[in-house]
Image (tube, rainbow over all chains, first blue to last red; front, top):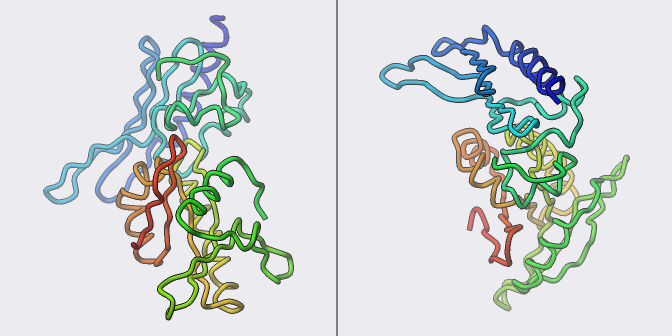
Length: 115
Length: 138
């Protein structure tokens, strides 16, 4: 199944590129792509006066050969974007929803993961 | 018109437990095209004040982006509010949202500010267990 993991990594990194270079007056985005640990993040980093801005806009992991959406504070349905890239819906885990609710969505893995 | 799901029944039963009578399921607007909010309900208040009547639109917030779900829900609320104020101004419109939406977007700056500024009435329901509904504003 190594090909699917490699495919997921490519999809996620393509997706993350859309957020590259985004910036406001106070903060800009940083893309983190850790292929070894398989953690992928978009972070807002900057300052607003005395207030530090350091927040997560997007966080995806690959865990047990599935893509786990750990955080999605964007206005985009990342799960739909991944499906449009060719990722199977049952390979996507909505870690952003309480576990008991995930079965109500079309993104239902065949067995549960520790997300 | 939105499709019904099990969340529909959860909210309906919770309202009934709290003394509401379901009068419409769905509540259909006399518009072209036809719009339909999920439920109409009424409850007797202190006798001299008569009946309290509401329309409830049930949202489930099942996408990864709660911002996306919030934007969609508010759009729908705004459309229904316009027609409700014209045709049945005595009736109050409520957005029924699950508890995880309250915790993950409605209690955060974007949700809180928008709900307050646009004066959106919320009723929070629990999907996990039979809990009392949470009305905002109370």
